[in-house]
Image (cartoon, rainbow, N blue to C red; front, side, top):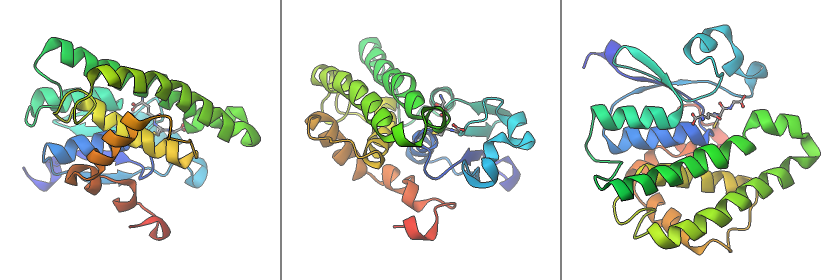
Length: 217
Ligand SMILES: N[C@@H](CCC(=O)N[C@@H](CS)C(=O)NCC(=O)O)C(=O)O
């Protein structure tokens, strides 16, 4: 692959949705270039005209690959899965595949959007922490129960799947909002196991090209 045809990931180091995609790219061994979109600086670079032409939702991530630009992290991961199928991120078995999609949607549709920056701005500074804690806890209450039926070593059985790519960044959000994770032993166990894997480490927010020096590790 020539330098110019390398996929480009528009990403923000702290964005949990960008992290999902970074893990997928790392697991599948796809070499890519990062273009940082700072969600805070200049009033939010996601609102620039240039970025809006790439993703009209004004959100990261967006991935330029194979001549197209894709927004929405789960759509990106599914595209990578269909075009670069190894290692598999969606199980072959339809029932397990449904569980992976259920958990991914629970996080990507039922938790993260409710604690996203744009919603927190509407909620107001003094209510942000309790708002975010409530939405994460209500999602994690459901997720912990679901995992009792689906989990092995990871969210669904013993293979890393798209559900795990959603779990780890959401747990990091929970940490940021000081959520007490003690009621969620299965979530904690799986998160710890996943964080030991190289793909989750290289894609970690503390190791991105746009990570500020004081947050690097
Ligand atoms: N459903 C989208 C959500 C993307 C999203 O919420 N991105 C956040 C960062 S994790 C964002 O860009 N927020 C900017 C803003 O709220 O202004 C996805 O999965 O990609």
